[in-house]
Image 1 (spheres, rainbow, N blue to C red):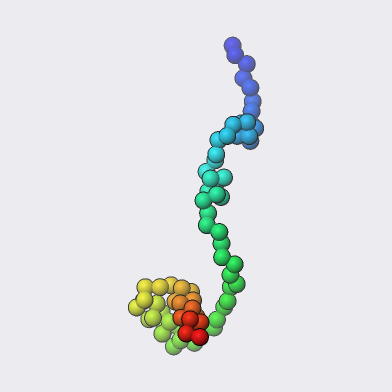
Image 2 (cartoon, helix red, strand yellow; image 1 turned 135 degrees about the vertical axis):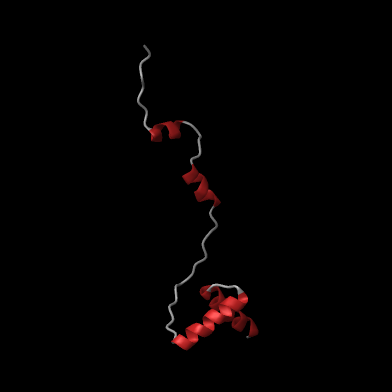
Length: 76
């Protein structure tokens, strides 16, 4: 009978040039923008208005708020 060798998965991957999904995904990820999280507190009326505008423009709340900010910055 042939002798069985016990090889760990890590050793096998290091000895060959096989790319795992994890290492392949790391290379394909887009670089992240450097951003800072901002929280705002809105009244019920303001929130309803924001949701209405988001439905009209098909944007999420954060995307709509960023759009308003960028548009305002471009005006200056």
